[in-house]
Image (cartoon, rainbow, N blue to C red; front, side):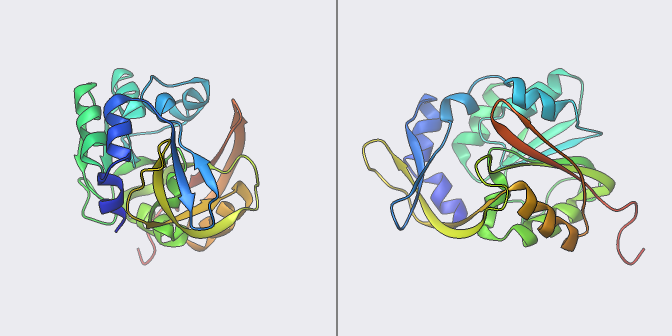
Length: 221
């Protein structure tokens, strides 16, 4: 369901043009603006704080148009973006990045060897089940890996599971799909249960981030 939603217009059209407005819309009418223009530009100062904390090869989960993947490659890092949107993958490739049309819940190249996993731009919401997403991230990363997630800047206790649709400024709407919205405190609670240890929290340019550290060895090792 999620892949179908993100492949459908109006999301595809917004990525193709690099312009919004675009929103996530809950059933009750609540709207969350999606920063398409920012996603389609180079890394901003908040993104740079994320890039500085990456270690080893980096897997960008839900890479969108690929600004972080391209920036990491330019810095000499091995990086791969995965996304369920064909337009997002195509735009990443056109920008000189590396990306695959893939859900994180499908097989990923080099599973168990990624030094950093990124869940930026609200991608902790992928699948509507943060605990499952964090467990999957632990599977694809190496022992002792870093996971950096962007969380709700408005409410550090936010912990919502919702059904949303992508909507543009004309009211055109994509198919509904499950999503989650987490604040930093709520994310840290889910992380511990999934085997991650909260390492640091910070804000930059009005955005909120959490760095998690994976165990030094896999469970059962």
